Length: 161
Figure (cartoon, one colour):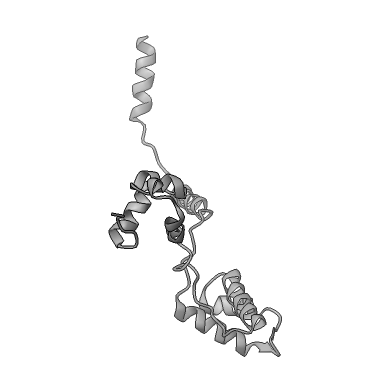
């Protein structure tokens, strides 16, 4: 047992020398490992969308893009080529439908909780005994009591006397 302890402490007293090249290589391996991490691309600003559309228009001939136009514009604005292609596609759809070109983001319109629509014209057709309180009215309309209460607070629904 004493021999093992002596051998262990003798090994600890030896100087350990690191090769600088090996240490440098390990840092590079760490950087390469993190290179595969994907980050979400930022959304295009309205100004960027307009500039991309104008750049694509300059590179088009009779409404058709020349070869590699989307790649060149993507490199120019430092965005992915699919983002450029989506802007061009939206513009072409607007032209095909005969409406003014609108390349603005659809995100502000298509996000958030959707409004619950209640047909208030049906309230007058419901018998008075079924609409005497919010709970029975909500059950008859097929909506929530809280939704009807919110409409009541907004003044769209009023009490019956």
